[in-house]
Image (cartoon, rainbow, N blue to C red; front, side, top):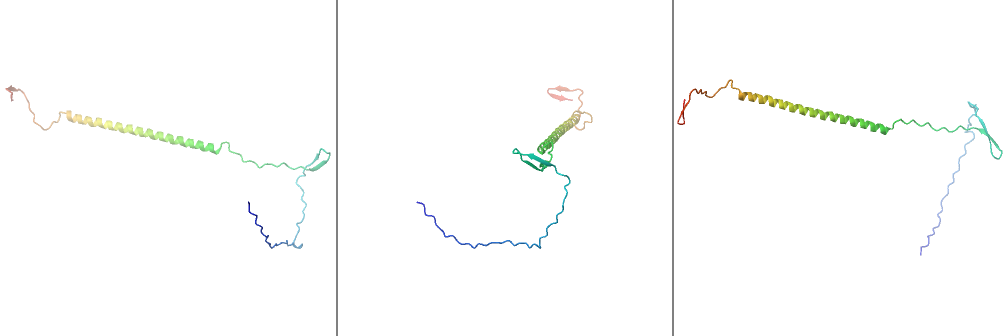
Amino acid sequence: MYPEPARHTPTERAVTTYQPTPIPPAAVHPAPVVPVQPSTVPAVASIVLPDGRIITGYTIDAVRPEPVTAKPAVSRTAVNVALGGVGFLAVCGGLLLLTSFIAALTAFIGQLITLAAVIFGGWIAVQVLSTSGHKGGTMVNIRRAVIKRNHFHG
């Protein structure tokens, strides 16, 4: 049912072998050995194992973790939120002052219009109702009038 696997002849490959080149001893200069005295004598510790063996060696200083940078007392996000709130309040206060200014200006203009109407209306009333300096027209003085049969005799 399944086809037979195809058998391929292995191909021969050329194998290349690399050999390291030795360094001649004349080219190697060993570093001079300088004895260094430790600044402090390390402490020697001995441990007794449960089977009675004693192991002696130098103590190893505990690994000290890197100092963690101190985080600020308040997170940066909280500072940004607070500054945004202060800015929002400043804008709201400015808008409130602007609205108050517009309302005051509107009331002032309304009062000026009312004052102008009162002054202008008073001037018109004085012109209409004043009798002094009446010029033009005919002046008729009626002293004694006699009316006979719907006819005026003056």
